[in-house]
Length: 283
Ligand SMILES: Nc1ncnc2c1ncn2[C@@H]1O[C@H](COP(=O)(O)OP(=O)(O)O)[C@@H](O)[C@H]1O
Ligand SMILES: Cc1ncc(COP(=O)(O)O)c(N)n1
Image (tube, rainbow, N blue to C red; front, side, top):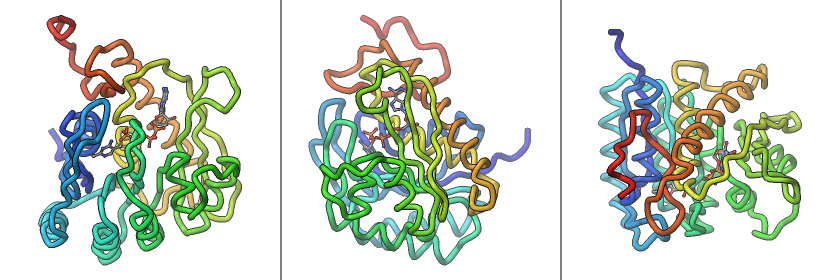
């Protein structure tokens, strides 16, 4: 058996096991990679709400990142909920010092439940991290926040994605069905610096169990880019679009698998397992 690639997640924990580090490690494992982790925030969270957040001291986050990067041959990095402006800047500084591998930044600011996981200062700090990212994967609310726009701004997603790409990294603006359209397709907008955005389209899965889908998607994208160039898509956007389509169909397949699960009173977890589930779970 050959030695696996190593993927590192720098992200928050979700006590309900749906989003954050739990989703990232499961997704890396499902791609055959060894997952390493640095915990930037801890949340007391369930399917309905985020009830409390603890941000560990920055020195402790730095110690985790340094331990992993100093010892393991990390082939890709994914960041999720970083939790404070200082953590965003710390990750930017550490990864800028060791360039050369893909970095997928999921700028977690607003959870599926609507909870705010990163305020205006965290959004502003991403200005320091984005130039070091290979790809950033905001949803619509997060893209507006990163651009300093009002939450009700009506700029179309394709233009938001292209504006964000002008910060120097590729962008996947993740989305749901087109507004006003029948919810049968999901549209993600993909942009690389200096070019208009293109669309990656896949079938919509009708489910409430989508908690953790953004983390799963960004981790799947990092897993697919692992071992490749640090600037995927900058020479040929088709390379990045193909990786985005793969990661999106992986995520949709996870959503399909957990479509009818009955876990929790709110937005239930997206499936993290490929193994058969135990029938006793339905009792
Ligand atoms: N119900 C769904 N059916 C199919 N794909 C979905 C669904 N919800 C989200 N996705 C896809 O999952 C990926 C992550 O997007 P999303 O969950 O919107 O991110 P976030 O959690 O950051 O808001 C995207 O490729 C998106 O198109
Ligand atoms: C610790 C943590 N990280 C990320 C998310 C976002 O995930 P989602 O958008 O699927 O709720 C979350 N809810 N909690």
